[in-house]
Image 1 (spheres, rainbow, N blue to C red):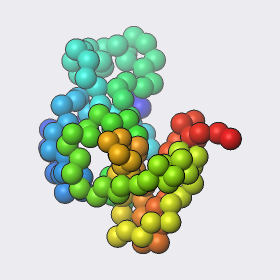
Image 2 (tube, rainbow, N blue to C red; image 1 turned 120 degrees about the vertical axis):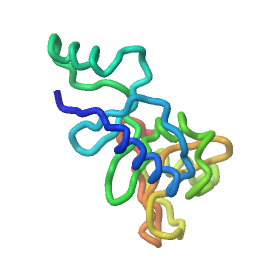
Image 3 (cartoon, rainbow, N blue to C red; image 1 turned 135 degrees about the horizontal axis):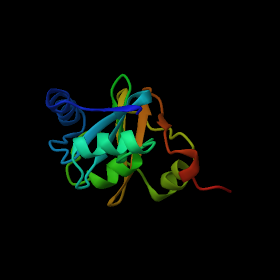
Length: 149
């Protein structure tokens, strides 16, 4: 199987980083790290042991929902910004409806922010994360989720 379960010490460290970066204090999921440094969260009723046993019987490629990409800093997935929106209190960039249209088409936004990862918000909706280079917010909306012309 191409994943491993995060140990409690790894989960604690991850939550500490999430709190510093976004204000997130809780991840009520069984966390797994897959290839490419992606963190997935599983909220089902299966135990670690049952998941491992299933992996021995069948080819388990993916389990749980993709939540976080571990890069130089942590970047929340679009789904994670939705699921964890009640906890997100830091590094939020609010955009207009016009900027939202551009963002959802995969365009970068000419918004000057401190470097690093920022959660994008329009009204009450969180719509993923962008990375600021100090001059613009670089778009990370997956191609399959973008609006096509």
